[in-house]
Length: 352
Image 1 (spheres, rainbow, N blue to C red):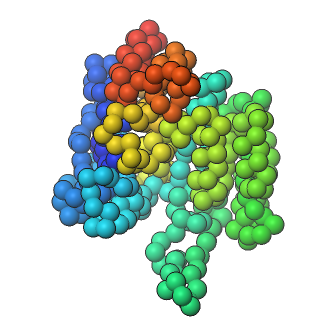
Image 2: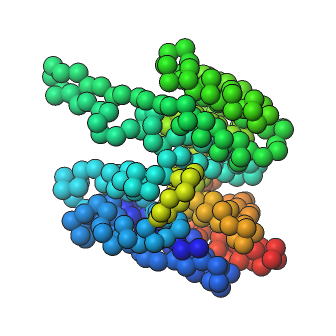
Image 3: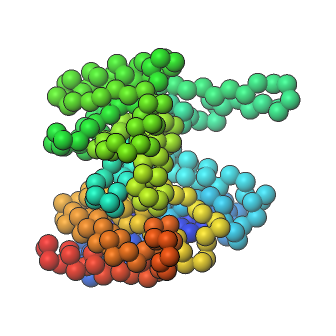
């Protein structure tokens, strides 16, 4: 498996160093090849004048997957000179048709994982031609939201494939059918696919889902929803889990094609204020790595070891600032990552 490493902006380099160290360790040396680091985003623009330099695109085209740190603001790059670095990520998704998002949130308190599956192309996530800007004074702004039955069915099918057999955990499909035609389509198609697959689901309006996810009720196993709803609700789930850094994300291409089939990243963004201070939590990057390793039977045991190692190390209480208990001294990014790598190597060696 060839993986292109794109550290990106802000804390991206810091939080992906641990996962890359693990990928290049003897544990995976015969199974994985890592290329990079390759520039992208604001730092890519700063170095080359392009958000997605040609050499980075070529590295992605020749890879099976991308491990991305983050794109967004970077303290070393003038924001005025590079106002929209996120377009580099949008461009990669569109170039390689990475049209479905799978996010995995780990709850350290009980070890449970909640998965959010949503569309990335279609729905609220559309091209520039579907957005009309206002002059800020007299003209209106408009955003066109379009979903097709195949786009909805694809998300549902991927979600149900991931759900497996877990009758004790809920699967919810979130929409706003009382307001949006796209949500009425969503509910109709998800219901049909669930019936065909024999999967039990609950339909929940997005406002009710937000309440349930923010309350003390048990979290569902799976949330299926449109892109923008899923973007917001996955952050709510992270809040329940304890930190935005407890989420790994994959942007995947479900069907064939050339170039990468998926891009993996933490969901917390570039966090420019934390950059360079050795404080960011690398858990999201390790979860993204576990999702990547899940895709190959030869590396699944390492993916399981990564998740177990994260839970084991978080349980010690020696954690980064976002998870540290009041009155305790947090550890740095590098120290926590090194411990996770060492524990993963120990657990994976026993499993193999």
